[in-house]
Amino acid sequence: MVNKRAQMVANKRKKYARKKAWKELSPMAKFGTITAAAVQLSLLVAAQTDITRRPANQIRGSKAMWRVATLINFVGPGSYFTFGVKRHSAAK
Image (cartoon, rainbow, N blue to C red; front, side):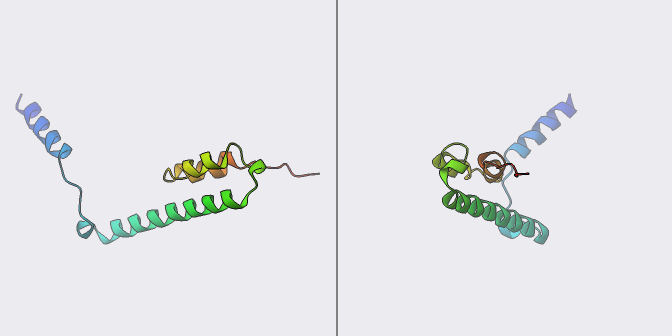
């Protein structure tokens, strides 16, 4: 009975634990966060640029839909480059 009560209290504390401030992060955590943000921003810019330059007939769906979809973290640009761009088969 005591273990269950202690476990419930611990779970409640974890639930309401505050997030760490930037200055409280380790240097490695800061590096990882900055790297992930840079990769995400690069993918977004690449996808938006490609949507702008590519003719509409070479994109599956509407350009507006893909512009909005690319705003979803890593998933959006990855989905656009995987599913949104029509691939032409190589001529033999």
